[in-house]
Length: 402
Image (cartoon, rainbow, N blue to C red; front, side, top):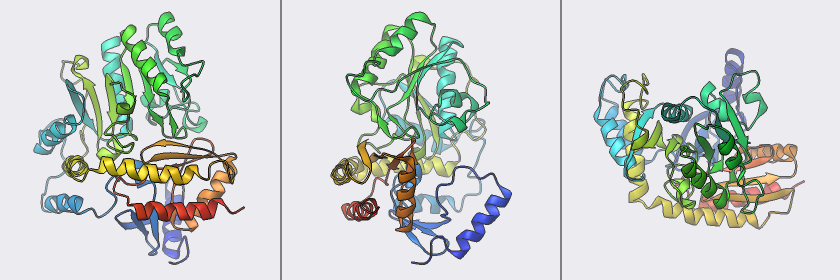
């Protein structure tokens, strides 16, 4: 392995920083290629990837099924179409395949990204309920476009000086006996509410896992006050928790749900009673991204089924969490939490978290920050026991050093 970052990477990063907004880059990593659960940079350095591009690469890299789909479309001249003006077979195939892993009586709307999926989910709720205040959680992340951004509340820099819709905020409860677990009821009694929106595992907020009682209480209150419950599964969805959707761990069903990332395209899925029943209420020029992404999304779902990857996620997640739990309480690690292959490691200090992340990068292991002082792990669904153990070895060595 060469120097990290290498000469080529430094030159490319310099051009980007000179010409583009320096957004949320975590590492001086310039991606060139990948295979399995490994990413290669432009200087030839290889990294074990425990991020799967924030869950957007569920099958890792160079997966033969994905290469097969891409090869088919390499000879087609019209792969990006105005997908809400023209029909295509890929849209039909994805709609059937996606609905096969969702509750009965659901429909969907395809768009480009997670934040658009949230935007259209809240539009469906507003359409039904009217432009009233909504309820969302402290430390939530639902996207960065202005509508979704109202309900995001994880970092101040994401929101400063931007306008908002009317919103009431409640605590995201992670313990079954939290005294604020019923906080939404007071708001529902005193206000006309358009919807309740929450994640099941807070992504940007720190990989905080909701308590079952909290989510079940929100479902019960949504039913009691006839308010739609929107579940944001943009990051948790399509297998990362060991089930198709995180809500399955909680014994509830959403009225409306947002999905993206692992799906390759954005999707708002909803109970048919929330269908606008009028054309043009929802639309998107590149609805569903492009034909290639829709075809890949369909294949990803089929591969997860065929290769029993949900079982792999559960087994590998148990191995990873067990290895990390053994060092919880040591080396400044205060907590390890998660479901499946979505695991958060919390440190006592943010600067320690940042230092350890940089050291992991220098050891060719990719992880991501979350919340104020946590690391998040979300490896591809295809990760092997050997790769989990390799990652644990590196983390143990890095975390044990001062």
